[in-house]
Structures are given as C-alpha cells and as structure tokens.
Length: 263
Image (cartoon, rainbow, N blue to C red; front, side, top):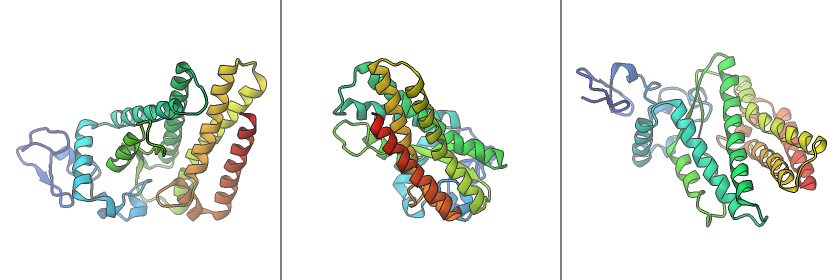
C-alpha cells in the first residue's frame, strides 16, 4: 500500500490509531506525518506553539490538510507557499488603498509584508530551537482558506494566517510565553529600524512612503499578534506574565501612534 504522506509503496504499512490512515515506517508516528489528530496525542499546550483546535478537526478540513501535506511535504515548501499567499494579500491590500501608490511601490510593500511575516515566524522558530524544542513552520487548511480569500480586492477584511510555527515538546508557560513574544518583538525591531532610516536618510517621496509604511505594517503586526485571545501570541504572553504582556502591548500601541504622526 502507498504511504498517505509521501506516497511511497510499503509492503507492511503502519496504521495510525489517530487519523486511521496508513503510512510507511518513516512517517508512522503522528508527529512525522503531521497527523490531523495530533491534539489527541499530547496535551494541547504541549503539542504545538499554535494549538490545534479540536473543533476544527472535521473531516473536510482533515482531507484538505492531508492533501496540502502530500504536496508541500517539506517545511521549506510550506513556508514558500505561505509567503506567496502573504505577498498576494499585501499586493491586494495596497492596490485598493486610498493612497495613490505606484505599481512599483505596491510590489515593494507586498514584499515588505511578506518579509515581516517571515521574520516574525522565524523568530518563534529559532528561539524554540535554541531552547531545545523541535520547531517547524506548517500551513493549515483554515488559515490557508482565510488568507486565500483575502487576496481578492473586494474582500475588505484581510486575514494573514496561512500557517504557524509548530513546536514539539513540553514547554512551560514561561518558555512558551517568551517564544510567543519573539514574533511581535521582531516586528517592533523592524519598525524601529525603519524609523531610524527615516530620521537619518534623505529619501525621495516614494521611498519615504515605502519606509514609513513598512514601520506601520510592523507595528500593526506586533499589536495584532499581542491580542490576548485564542491561539494568538498575546494569549501565551498573558498566561506567562500579565505585566510583561501589558507593557509589550502598550509599547506597540505607542509605536503605532508615533508612526501615524510620521506618515
């Protein structure tokens, strides 16, 4: 029979007791084939950085997840796929903006959004790896669907959530909170670098618009991800230390206020 993950023929396939599919010896463990029922294997907090919600694990979403994983069977492919979706959402957003951006500026701002998303997720990954946990970026069906629909110009609310960094292990609330905070912190650092460029460089009006908007984009990403709800970064930071969460969130709001006065 063929492995449901990599399609390699296996004479003696292994049957996953969670998702009920068959796999080769290399992908027999739930963690190895990105099992759609992974939340049943470990406690939700211990399963991943972005918890897998049981109420979303219905048959149609499981089927989509498996098809995506078969096609995008490496972390790099999943990351590139997610970045392309984010780039297209960025182009769509700035294309319909009230500000008269040129085609070149729209493309650059789309790339800025994509780069900010990448650095945000990789900040989670590298800090998790540094703490001894296995961490990989993975797309998920619900996030891909929401991000895909955000590509269309007529959709007013843009959602960027094609996937997230998933951690295998048993991080404490403290470590999980620090890993969660790494993403928004990276966006604020990028925003501050943009402000430094604005202050100490002589820019054309087009470059000024690009750099100032880049600062604003990173401020919004940081503030949004620090909202203390559901699986968002802010919830993990809040569970770790409420005072650190409050300071971080207010710092992001203040940063957005400053940038708004610059633009």
